[in-house]
Image 1 (cartoon, rainbow, N blue to C red):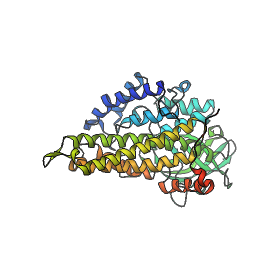
Image 2 (image 1 turned 90 degrees about the vertical axis):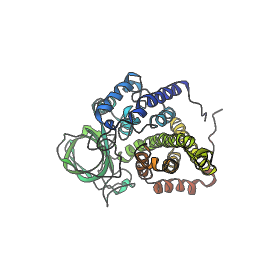
Image 3 (image 1 turned 135 degrees about the vertical axis):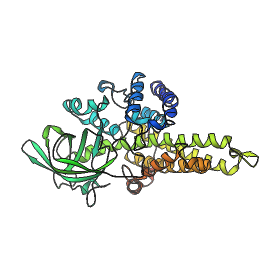
Image 4 (image 1 turned 30 degrees about the horizontal axis):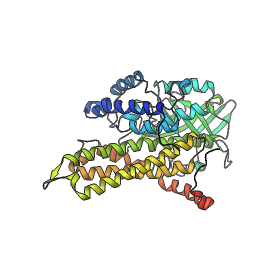
Length: 402
């Protein structure tokens, strides 16, 4: 692959970088810009979103005919990394989870009518959305085959009963994508559905407290007690729920990596500024060999993560599912983010541990990276199976067509 960005992607990356530097990083210093869950509050969010729209930086990941900018996955990788140099970044550009993944899957597999009703309001920024899959034990977590929530056909409707938890964004969402069991078939037993917040027959039991900080809408526990969904709001065919999940999570897992790399870079930026100016015993910290080792290791890890992420992005652009490559990027970048911010806090000392910088915010946020969209151990199982099946061909180069 060619690691040079094409002119369109580079132009967007530069514009995003300027916006983040001029608008968002300064805003992080304003205590009034935060809501009670330590994210950007609604008033400031709408101000920043208006500015992003006016500069043509809205919904980079969505095709132009659906209201976005039509970037390929490689372009997204470069731009999402720049966005999340600010802790406020992705949501301002309408590129934050879970809306990001929901928009991409609806754009790929939704009918024209479904795109108009369910996708367009999310693209426009008028509503937010949520993806409803994970369940309390003995229900499904990383293994969708353990799904307990059921959808039973009743005429032209489906009746939903079940229990979900850790559903990101649910408290603020209007549009939901639900995965439920429609048969006992091992591969075709799940189906995806669309429903609205105002539909009766379900409730938010609670917003689950977490280490934080939180996305808008938090992480919620939901109960379904007879929610009725018209068959026209079924996404893809009956039995295609696992396929919908795979389509959504493939790229969505990689967009996490893109954003986490931005946070890792920001952590090192804060640390390098500090050690370059902080003097101790007649030297700046940056002149000390031990500090240089820590910075060098973190910088190298970030670059490794960038290469893994961009390689997976390039493969997705070629039409490959890139499951192995996405899983490897997910594991590596989750570790890299945690190590980068931990290094930054160590180098900044008490300042890093305080709320005078966003490092402690990033540190708490980083811990979830090894859990969300599949725990690191599950992803290692995925590519170890590839290794056992492919043996030495696990490490192979693609060949250009002659």
